[in-house]
Image: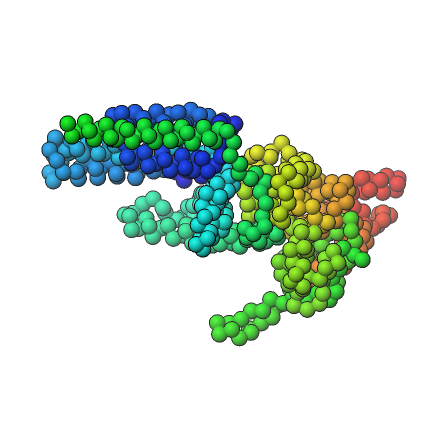
Amino acid sequence: MLRDITIGQYYPSDSILHKLDPRVKLLGTLVYVLSLFFFRGAAGFAAVTLGLAALIWLSKVPLRYMVKGLKAIGVILVLTGMFNLFLTPGEPLASFGIFKITEEGLKNAGFMVIRLTYLILGSSVLTLTTTPNRLTDGLEKALRPLNKIGVPVHEISMIMSIALRFIPILVEETDKIMKAQLARGADFESGNLIKKAKAMAPLLVPLFISAFRRANDLAMAMEARCYNGGEGRTKMKPLKYTGKDGWAYLIMAGYFAGIIVCVWMSRNGRNS
Amino acid sequence: MNLIEARKLVHEYIRRDEEGNVEGILAALDGVDLEVKAGEFVAILGHNGSGKSTLAKHLNVLLKASEGTLWVDGKDTLDDNYQWDIRKSAGMVFQNPDNQIIAGVVEEDVAFGPENIGVPTDEIWNRVEKSLKSVGMLGYREHSPNKLSGGQKQRVAIAGVMAMEPKCIVLDEPTAMLDPQGRREVLEAVGALNREKGITVILITHYMEEAVQADKVYVMDHGKVVMQGKPREIFSQVDRLKSYRLDVPQITLLAHELRKEGLQIPEGILTRQELAEALCQLY
């Protein structure tokens, strides 16, 4: 299951999305996420779906690869759907004991699941088309103004890029430890929830110890390569806006305006 | 002047109990003398706990000596002002390839060092290309390090050090976690850097076979340098090496055993070919 997480995994390709400035993509993701929570009605839905489809197509990342990332949040999706389905007040369509399904519930559940799915897919486009280093470069530069009020922007972005780099390594390690403990008779499957949680201890303790050891090694390796904080660093790939970044900003603005129009129209439609 | 020169280097790990009282002192380095000339290939051999890794960390100022002096490229390692200069001139490659690669793409990882020391962008691109080429990894420049084999990762790590254009590379058991294939790749890359680019190499290892190609070998035991000399001189003393819990290369051992059985072959045979020639001359 852990292997299926595609968040934070770069997919090498030469698509136009890959070549965009990470700051554009960061803002774009933000705009997209906002639009997901703003949109109302069929027109809005069509707009966000079209937007997502266009992004995925432009990214040249196989859809199958992206959908894999959804499996990991399957449980959350199902739970959210259920809560919305059964706990939304309104006209009951059908009822089972104390639970009843309402029309609003059905609608809410549908939209919520779609929103979450789109959210994961949309944000994975960002990480699939941007190397972690460029992503953090983008963050660092976009958030630089915060440095003035004492936010350690460089350090945060460095921590993030390292975390992203170590996700697959730690996943592999978890797998290894799990197998080693299974071979010694550990039981991760049976028993109730509490028993299962307790059974995780022999998995988590070695994992944490190894993570700390790795952190120690890595810190030493970084120091050995003259890492000395953000001061005086140069960049191999400094961020520079090009023509296509401007176009991307324009398209983004157009998209957002479209969503707002959709929201406004559906609100007017309801009022009249 | 020698590129690296250590005089009576001592490093003590002090163990304290919970109140901070000294419980015990472990001398990981105990009066080490070391001389490495520019362009040399030096191997430092030793069993686990012999202090060889501690010595390596001194060469890069990751640790500081408790006593004695160490000059790297004419700079005193005890002087804080030189810390970054020394790290620039003595690069370091560690044992675990996963724990020293910082970036998610090969070329960006190689660029990490030059970025830190403020090399201009165009020059970084040059250096990345040059150093990836020198370890034969240029074709992988846009790959993710996670998908490389251990030997390839370690060669990327070496390229990362090379990109800082050091005078000397210190490799701390770079092959300990690799399979035979990866080990060969890494050693070939290191040998080529030494021969072709004149980079001084200090290879720390407990595999005797890796020390054969060195110009000079130091053997360490319990924090002391107990033997030093050319590989041939060192490996001819099979019994003494065994007393330091080190195994001589298989071929040398075979020659040694044959000699003990009365065959007239010289001591200190290092390669298969030498042994074959020596045996042929008998008949």
